[in-house]
Image (cartoon, rainbow, N blue to C red; front, top):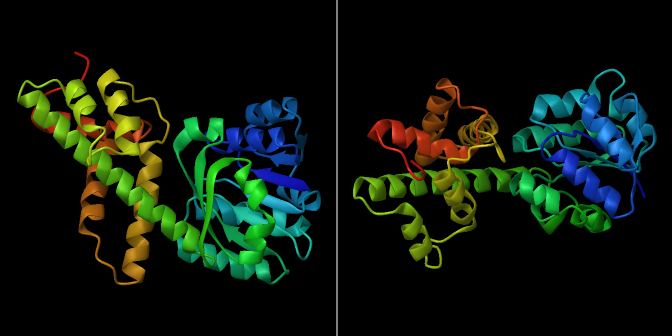
Length: 295
Protein backbone atom coordinates (compact mmCIF):
# COMPACT_ATOMS: atom_id res chain seq x y z
CA UNK A 1 0.00 0.00 0.00
CA UNK A 2 1.38 3.40 -1.02
CA UNK A 3 0.99 5.87 1.87
CA UNK A 4 1.46 9.63 1.77
CA UNK A 5 2.34 11.49 4.97
CA UNK A 6 2.22 15.27 5.39
CA UNK A 7 3.11 16.82 8.75
CA UNK A 8 6.34 15.71 10.44
CA UNK A 9 6.19 17.59 13.73
CA UNK A 10 6.57 16.37 17.30
CA UNK A 11 3.87 13.74 16.78
CA UNK A 12 3.89 13.23 13.02
CA UNK A 13 7.55 12.34 12.68
CA UNK A 14 7.55 9.34 15.05
CA UNK A 15 4.14 8.24 13.75
CA UNK A 16 5.49 8.22 10.21
CA UNK A 17 8.53 6.24 11.34
CA UNK A 18 6.25 3.58 12.78
CA UNK A 19 4.37 3.34 9.47
CA UNK A 20 7.70 2.75 7.75
CA UNK A 21 8.68 0.13 10.33
CA UNK A 22 5.44 -1.71 9.56
CA UNK A 23 6.59 -2.12 5.96
CA UNK A 24 4.47 0.44 4.13
CA UNK A 25 5.82 2.41 1.17
CA UNK A 26 5.72 6.03 2.34
CA UNK A 27 6.09 9.36 0.53
CA UNK A 28 6.51 12.43 2.74
CA UNK A 29 6.25 16.19 2.41
CA UNK A 30 6.91 18.89 5.00
CA UNK A 31 8.44 22.35 5.16
CA UNK A 32 10.76 21.12 7.92
CA UNK A 33 13.70 19.94 5.81
CA UNK A 34 15.51 18.42 8.80
CA UNK A 35 12.53 16.17 9.58
CA UNK A 36 12.16 15.28 5.90
CA UNK A 37 15.82 14.27 5.70
CA UNK A 38 15.42 12.13 8.83
CA UNK A 39 12.46 10.30 7.28
CA UNK A 40 14.34 9.89 4.01
CA UNK A 41 17.16 8.21 5.93
CA UNK A 42 14.54 5.96 7.54
CA UNK A 43 13.37 4.79 4.10
CA UNK A 44 10.70 7.26 3.00
CA UNK A 45 10.48 8.79 -0.45
CA UNK A 46 10.45 12.59 -0.55
CA UNK A 47 7.99 14.69 -2.56
CA UNK A 48 8.43 18.31 -3.60
CA UNK A 49 4.79 19.27 -3.03
CA UNK A 50 1.50 18.12 -1.58
CA UNK A 51 0.34 17.42 -5.13
CA UNK A 52 3.25 15.05 -5.69
CA UNK A 53 2.44 13.22 -2.47
CA UNK A 54 -1.16 12.83 -3.66
CA UNK A 55 -0.04 11.49 -7.03
CA UNK A 56 2.00 8.78 -5.32
CA UNK A 57 -0.50 7.73 -2.64
CA UNK A 58 -3.43 5.37 -2.30
CA UNK A 59 -4.08 6.85 1.12
CA UNK A 60 -2.86 10.16 2.54
CA UNK A 61 -2.22 10.82 6.23
CA UNK A 62 -2.14 14.42 7.46
CA UNK A 63 -0.87 15.38 10.92
CA UNK A 64 -1.00 19.16 11.23
CA UNK A 65 -1.57 21.83 13.92
CA UNK A 66 -5.10 23.01 13.04
CA UNK A 67 -7.80 23.16 10.36
CA UNK A 68 -6.31 26.07 8.34
CA UNK A 69 -3.13 24.04 7.88
CA UNK A 70 -5.09 20.95 6.82
CA UNK A 71 -7.13 22.92 4.31
CA UNK A 72 -4.03 24.63 2.94
CA UNK A 73 -2.17 21.34 2.45
CA UNK A 74 -5.17 19.78 0.72
CA UNK A 75 -6.75 22.59 -1.26
CA UNK A 76 -4.11 25.24 -2.06
CA UNK A 77 -2.39 25.38 -5.44
CA UNK A 78 -0.19 22.28 -5.81
CA UNK A 79 -2.05 20.85 -2.81
CA UNK A 80 -2.59 17.16 -2.24
CA UNK A 81 -6.10 17.10 -3.70
CA UNK A 82 -4.71 18.00 -7.12
CA UNK A 83 -2.81 14.72 -7.08
CA UNK A 84 -5.27 12.42 -5.34
CA UNK A 85 -7.33 10.11 -7.52
CA UNK A 86 -11.01 9.32 -7.19
CA UNK A 87 -11.55 6.59 -4.60
CA UNK A 88 -8.49 7.46 -2.54
CA UNK A 89 -8.74 8.31 1.16
CA UNK A 90 -7.42 11.07 3.40
CA UNK A 91 -6.86 10.11 7.04
CA UNK A 92 -6.60 13.41 8.87
CA UNK A 93 -4.96 12.69 12.22
CA UNK A 94 -4.81 16.38 13.18
CA UNK A 95 -6.85 17.64 16.12
CA UNK A 96 -9.28 20.17 14.66
CA UNK A 97 -12.82 21.47 15.00
CA UNK A 98 -15.25 18.66 14.07
CA UNK A 99 -17.33 21.14 12.05
CA UNK A 100 -14.26 21.77 9.91
CA UNK A 101 -13.76 18.01 9.51
CA UNK A 102 -17.23 17.80 7.99
CA UNK A 103 -16.51 20.77 5.70
CA UNK A 104 -13.25 19.20 4.54
CA UNK A 105 -15.04 15.90 3.87
CA UNK A 106 -17.59 17.70 1.71
CA UNK A 107 -14.86 19.37 -0.36
CA UNK A 108 -12.94 16.13 -0.82
CA UNK A 109 -16.11 14.32 -1.85
CA UNK A 110 -16.47 16.62 -4.85
CA UNK A 111 -13.50 14.76 -6.35
CA UNK A 112 -14.57 11.36 -5.02
CA UNK A 113 -12.03 11.37 -2.19
CA UNK A 114 -13.13 10.08 1.23
CA UNK A 115 -12.14 11.31 4.68
CA UNK A 116 -11.53 9.69 8.04
CA UNK A 117 -11.01 12.18 10.87
CA UNK A 118 -8.69 10.31 13.21
CA UNK A 119 -7.09 12.52 15.89
CA UNK A 120 -4.74 10.94 18.39
CA UNK A 121 -3.99 11.12 22.09
CA UNK A 122 -0.92 10.19 24.08
CA UNK A 123 1.79 12.74 23.44
CA UNK A 124 5.27 12.35 21.98
CA UNK A 125 6.46 9.38 24.10
CA UNK A 126 3.50 7.26 23.01
CA UNK A 127 3.89 8.44 19.40
CA UNK A 128 7.47 7.19 19.53
CA UNK A 129 6.66 3.77 20.96
CA UNK A 130 3.51 3.35 18.87
CA UNK A 131 0.98 3.28 21.70
CA UNK A 132 -1.10 6.40 21.02
CA UNK A 133 -4.89 6.14 20.98
CA UNK A 134 -6.70 6.92 17.72
CA UNK A 135 -10.33 8.10 17.68
CA UNK A 136 -11.86 7.72 14.23
CA UNK A 137 -14.88 9.23 12.52
CA UNK A 138 -15.99 8.07 9.08
CA UNK A 139 -17.46 5.29 6.99
CA UNK A 140 -17.17 1.88 8.67
CA UNK A 141 -15.98 0.07 5.52
CA UNK A 142 -13.25 2.67 4.97
CA UNK A 143 -12.28 2.41 8.64
CA UNK A 144 -11.97 -1.37 8.37
CA UNK A 145 -9.85 -1.12 5.23
CA UNK A 146 -7.29 1.15 6.86
CA UNK A 147 -7.47 -0.19 10.40
CA UNK A 148 -4.14 -2.03 10.13
CA UNK A 149 -2.41 1.10 8.82
CA UNK A 150 -3.67 3.17 11.75
CA UNK A 151 -2.85 0.34 14.17
CA UNK A 152 0.78 0.40 12.98
CA UNK A 153 1.11 3.74 14.81
CA UNK A 154 -1.01 3.08 17.86
CA UNK A 155 -2.05 0.94 20.79
CA UNK A 156 -5.76 1.35 20.12
CA UNK A 157 -7.90 2.43 17.17
CA UNK A 158 -11.64 2.91 17.78
CA UNK A 159 -14.30 4.10 15.36
CA UNK A 160 -16.68 6.39 17.27
CA UNK A 161 -19.12 7.39 14.52
CA UNK A 162 -19.33 9.33 11.27
CA UNK A 163 -17.06 12.12 10.04
CA UNK A 164 -16.53 14.63 12.85
CA UNK A 165 -17.03 12.10 15.62
CA UNK A 166 -13.29 11.48 15.89
CA UNK A 167 -12.52 15.11 16.60
CA UNK A 168 -15.49 15.46 18.95
CA UNK A 169 -14.04 12.56 20.93
CA UNK A 170 -10.61 14.19 20.93
CA UNK A 171 -12.09 17.43 22.29
CA UNK A 172 -13.74 15.44 25.09
CA UNK A 173 -10.36 13.84 25.79
CA UNK A 174 -8.61 17.22 25.96
CA UNK A 175 -11.18 18.63 28.36
CA UNK A 176 -10.69 15.67 30.69
CA UNK A 177 -6.88 15.85 30.48
CA UNK A 178 -6.70 19.60 31.19
CA UNK A 179 -9.06 19.39 34.16
CA UNK A 180 -7.19 16.36 35.54
CA UNK A 181 -3.91 18.27 35.45
CA UNK A 182 -5.54 21.26 37.12
CA UNK A 183 -7.02 19.07 39.88
CA UNK A 184 -3.65 17.39 40.39
CA UNK A 185 -1.98 20.80 40.63
CA UNK A 186 -4.43 22.05 43.25
CA UNK A 187 -4.02 18.85 45.28
CA UNK A 188 -0.22 19.15 45.29
CA UNK A 189 -0.42 22.81 46.31
CA UNK A 190 -2.57 21.74 49.26
CA UNK A 191 0.04 19.14 50.20
CA UNK A 192 2.94 21.60 49.99
CA UNK A 193 1.08 24.14 52.10
CA UNK A 194 0.33 21.44 54.68
CA UNK A 195 4.00 20.29 54.73
CA UNK A 196 3.08 16.86 53.31
CA UNK A 197 5.40 15.48 50.63
CA UNK A 198 3.47 15.44 47.30
CA UNK A 199 5.64 12.57 46.06
CA UNK A 200 4.47 10.38 48.93
CA UNK A 201 0.88 11.50 48.38
CA UNK A 202 1.20 10.52 44.72
CA UNK A 203 2.50 7.07 45.66
CA UNK A 204 -0.29 6.63 48.21
CA UNK A 205 -3.21 7.54 45.95
CA UNK A 206 -2.12 6.51 42.46
CA UNK A 207 -3.57 3.02 42.88
CA UNK A 208 -6.93 4.25 44.12
CA UNK A 209 -9.91 5.92 42.52
CA UNK A 210 -8.02 9.19 42.03
CA UNK A 211 -5.33 7.42 40.03
CA UNK A 212 -5.21 7.97 36.28
CA UNK A 213 -2.96 7.85 33.24
CA UNK A 214 -2.81 11.64 33.44
CA UNK A 215 -1.59 11.51 37.04
CA UNK A 216 1.01 8.85 36.27
CA UNK A 217 2.37 10.86 33.35
CA UNK A 218 2.26 14.39 34.78
CA UNK A 219 2.91 14.05 38.53
CA UNK A 220 6.56 12.96 38.00
CA UNK A 221 7.10 15.89 35.61
CA UNK A 222 5.80 18.31 38.25
CA UNK A 223 8.01 16.77 40.95
CA UNK A 224 11.12 16.89 38.77
CA UNK A 225 10.31 20.40 37.48
CA UNK A 226 10.53 18.99 33.97
CA UNK A 227 8.25 20.99 31.70
CA UNK A 228 9.85 20.05 28.40
CA UNK A 229 6.95 19.71 25.96
CA UNK A 230 5.35 16.37 25.33
CA UNK A 231 2.20 18.37 24.61
CA UNK A 232 2.55 22.15 24.60
CA UNK A 233 0.23 24.56 26.39
CA UNK A 234 -0.21 26.44 23.10
CA UNK A 235 -1.65 23.30 21.49
CA UNK A 236 -3.93 22.62 24.43
CA UNK A 237 -5.25 26.17 24.11
CA UNK A 238 -5.99 25.43 20.46
CA UNK A 239 -7.89 22.26 21.35
CA UNK A 240 -9.93 23.90 24.10
CA UNK A 241 -10.77 26.79 21.79
CA UNK A 242 -12.10 24.24 19.32
CA UNK A 243 -14.08 22.64 22.15
CA UNK A 244 -15.59 25.97 23.17
CA UNK A 245 -16.33 26.94 19.56
CA UNK A 246 -18.06 23.60 19.03
CA UNK A 247 -20.00 23.95 22.28
CA UNK A 248 -21.28 27.36 21.21
CA UNK A 249 -22.35 25.98 17.84
CA UNK A 250 -24.42 23.22 19.46
CA UNK A 251 -25.59 25.16 22.55
CA UNK A 252 -23.62 23.16 25.12
CA UNK A 253 -22.48 24.88 28.33
CA UNK A 254 -18.92 23.98 29.43
CA UNK A 255 -18.08 26.19 32.43
CA UNK A 256 -15.10 24.16 33.68
CA UNK A 257 -13.59 24.12 30.18
CA UNK A 258 -13.94 27.90 30.01
CA UNK A 259 -12.25 28.22 33.40
CA UNK A 260 -9.24 26.04 32.58
CA UNK A 261 -8.92 27.91 29.28
CA UNK A 262 -8.38 31.12 31.25
CA UNK A 263 -5.67 29.36 33.29
CA UNK A 264 -3.89 28.28 30.12
CA UNK A 265 -4.17 31.76 28.64
CA UNK A 266 -2.61 33.22 31.79
CA UNK A 267 0.31 30.80 31.44
CA UNK A 268 0.72 31.81 27.81
CA UNK A 269 0.81 35.47 28.84
CA UNK A 270 3.60 34.53 31.28
CA UNK A 271 5.62 33.22 28.32
CA UNK A 272 4.98 29.54 29.06
CA UNK A 273 2.98 28.60 25.97
CA UNK A 274 5.79 26.36 24.73
CA UNK A 275 5.93 24.38 27.99
CA UNK A 276 4.31 21.01 28.59
CA UNK A 277 0.75 21.25 29.88
CA UNK A 278 1.96 19.81 33.20
CA UNK A 279 3.11 23.43 33.73
CA UNK A 280 -0.49 24.19 34.66
CA UNK A 281 0.93 23.68 38.16
CA UNK A 282 2.94 26.90 37.64
CA UNK A 283 -0.31 28.89 37.61
CA UNK A 284 -1.25 27.58 41.06
CA UNK A 285 2.32 28.00 42.34
CA UNK A 286 2.22 31.68 41.36
CA UNK A 287 -1.14 32.16 43.13
CA UNK A 288 0.13 30.51 46.29
CA UNK A 289 3.79 31.64 46.24
CA UNK A 290 5.02 28.09 46.66
CA UNK A 291 6.79 25.47 44.53
CA UNK A 292 5.73 21.85 44.10
CA UNK A 293 8.41 19.16 44.04
CA UNK A 294 12.16 19.77 43.82
CA UNK A 295 13.38 22.80 45.74
